[in-house]
Length: 204
Image (cartoon, rainbow, N blue to C red; front, side, top):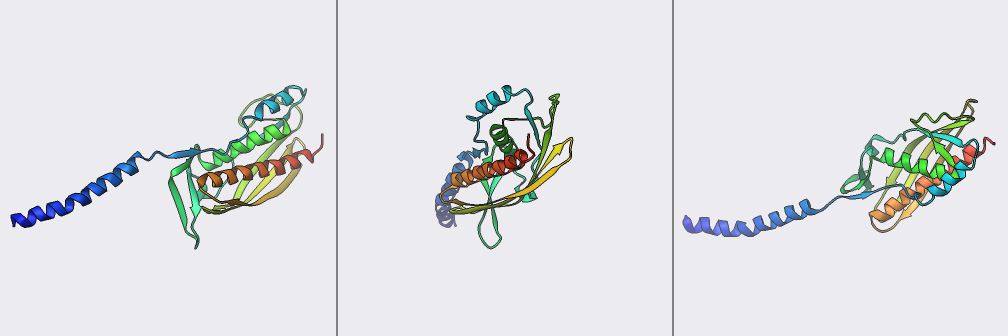
């Protein structure tokens, strides 16, 4: 009996060691954080443009609506057959709706030379444009592509005139998670340019 017990202990020892090493590796892996914002280097140009205008262009970018499965900080990848994989160690700095709204606002301010007054009392004068955005579809596959459909509305006040549109994108994302993030950033830029065109269509 004693010999058998000793044999079992020796046989289980390597397994216990492997498990402890694996647990230590999992515990030591730090999450990687990503952001959709890419226009910090362009914002000084936009600020200078706004300061030169007597009546700045006012916009208000509302919170972005997303499918509930995307309303999180974790990146999500499709794996085919309708299955999804939640990446525990690859995350957005903020929940995806906030990341998208902030990045889109920065892009629009840069492109239009505008000021985003959402949740601010800026004492504005002249026309203003409220922008509502809804992500209808956003799918990403590792070493595959990012497919997206973004619906948006621009409403001018005080006239109440509205422009609506959609931004569709199929972007290649070969490589790792960084390429998927780059494709998401390109989607934000495409959406910003489409919305900017709608704002400019109202005229001066």
